[in-house]
Image (tube, rainbow, N blue to C red; front, side, top):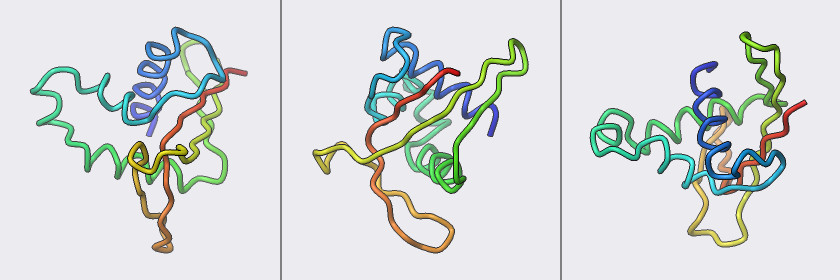
Length: 106
């Protein structure tokens, strides 16, 4: 969980040019995390979606960096264009569209 949050923050920072609260496409975050072909093989999109669904199942997604005690809140929401969304399933089997990621640093 912690490692996944760190990776999301790194990808988000790159795509948003370190501008917090700016929506970025979650599919673009995956693209950044797996820029090398070997990374895509080691971390397929289906695994990324699984990790994302585990994160979304939390009521509020918070992460506290143990190095500097920075606190981050993750907001995942659907994108207007369905093709830009992942469809993830929660614990009770309900599907949810997730396309945008916003991270707020507190």
